[in-house]
Amino acid sequence: MLKSKTAHGVHSPFVYKFVTELLETKNEAYYQFKELDAVRKQLLNNHNTIEITDFGAGSKVFKSNTRKISDIARHGISTKKFSELYFKLINFCNAEHVVELGTSIGLNTLYLANANSKSKIYTIEGCPALYEFSSQLFKKHNAENIKSLQGNFDSVLPELLNNLPRLDFFYVDGNHQYEATKKYFEMALTKKHEHSVFIFDDINWTEDMQRAWEEIKNHLEVTLSLDLFYAGIVFFRKEQKEKEHFILRY
Ligand SMILES: C[S@@+](CC[C@H](N)C(=O)[O-])C[C@H]1O[C@@H](n2cnc3c(N)ncnc32)[C@H](O)[C@@H]1O
Image (cartoon, rainbow, N blue to C red; front, side, top):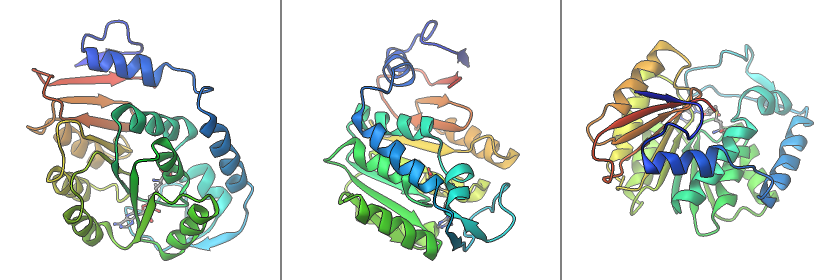
């Protein structure tokens, strides 16, 4: 396993490109990020409350089910840095068929949707109030390439995958439990191709999640894995002759 802070010392040409073009680039070039920053600010200033129905592994931060939008925006969603990385990654891979598990208030989904106008983003959320809130946000920002689906991942994901020709980008950010994470990975494998990208959030959240990540990255069909501590990314690229795992501090 190779540990690397920067591109120097990375021997895989693909990973070198990933590090230099995605991790080390400045984000000022993307005009969309300014608009998305403004949406984030609005959400951070929205102190209205919402009634959460817990569908997943619960929360380490929130004790009550009545939550302020501002608190969710601060503690319960992807950080600016990671949402921007996912945006760049969709561009980088030219991903068109994108699936996100866990919409929450919908900000990360807006990043995914703004990355590539040709892409279609399917995002699944179990909590009815969050589904309603995020659907309004998508409408307000004219995000016509987002299709939001309400229900449990366990039943909605297989149905969705059945209707997709292929899966280019798969982002798992909900129900962080061993069995569930492994199950969603196995389901998604049925529609993956050589250039698909799968991302698993919170791989170091619990020992269970570390175990799920360990097994995912060692899966026979995975040829390359990147551990960014808060998220793990796997690839199936065949040019990778030998399986490699990288730990990249980001
Ligand atoms: C961490 S949040 C998602 C954050 C968002 N993807 C982001 O990047 O900002 C996880 C969401 O997944 C939803 N969720 C968890 N388990 C679920 C399940 N089994 N079915 C449907 N939704 C679920 C929760 O309601 C929660 O809103």
